[in-house]
Length: 213
Image (cartoon, rainbow, N blue to C red; front, side, top):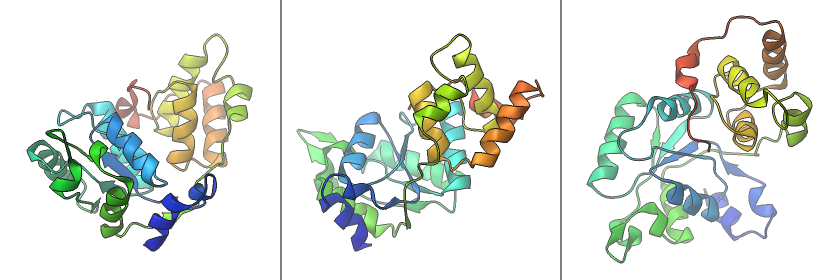
């Protein structure tokens, strides 16, 4: 797992040669930013204990496609979230940050930790590593009417239902295509179904418009 540390220490660009396979589940946006600054990782934020249906659907999708690594704050609220997710996803990996590493000006959180402490905590969970997926680019979004035109938002919403990745703006939608490992064949099949007006796949309640991320 030294490779996780070496990613963070590598020159810009080289740091993305490998990334953590599991999607790292944290509590908030600032925690996501701290993890991404420390090493290569995709993340999902719970937005606190009251995890809404759309976010839980993203965590479900992450668990199914890549596995998840739970990395919540070392406080009572963080442990409640960890316990809740651990019950629902017993195969999840767990990373713990020491309290003193997460404390800053009386505030406790992953966002306060140094990159080296975040890397050490993630290493302790023994994550798998992989090359980041770049199957889809912005050109796929534009050329398939998913951005920059009338009805693009609706089209993304329908396609997101078919693929089980939910609604997002163009940038978020592209991120999810790659993050959740959607294949080119799945993408083309969903586009075809969309153009033919087939009924949506209903894993879909999970895919109502979440906040973009």
